[in-house]
Image 1 (cartoon, rainbow, N blue to C red):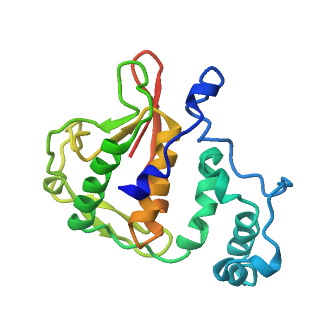
Image 2 (tube, rainbow, N blue to C red):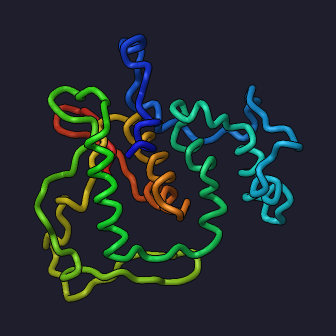
Length: 222
């Protein structure tokens, strides 16, 4: 919990009028942009130095981007900067495992601890992040994890015959809502500190989606 407190936002009071809660999403990563921050060769972390020599162009390009991302400015990173900061392009060059039920439970427990320590102001009447609700929905009666192999990777396949129009998924305690992009940033970086597998942050990034609530207010769901 002490680690999570490091990611508290400090600029709300001074910049409240200019604050964009969804600046995190961005418009894609510009690999040609010249950034002020640059890690010199003699200070390069070993993993970035290794990736710069990779024969995989995508990994090499990502390593070049990573040396330009200032970790002290993590709270300004958009989606794609976070994606490359955690080397997600490299992560997904290898098959990712299916999360176990225990890992999902551990992640939910971590999320609940995160919420208790989060001081982000409410967005209207809502916390900046919350579970869809406290109900439990057993998805396994409808679909089960499936590893297809190759580029398709992980997915779900039907566990039984499903009728047209039948509801097969409900957002319950299996779904986290973020009303504010900065809270999502804090959660991802705190999660990386808590769990030993950096690919978990990459998983969360590709599982996240954005949609509008009634009234047009956007939120991100995971």
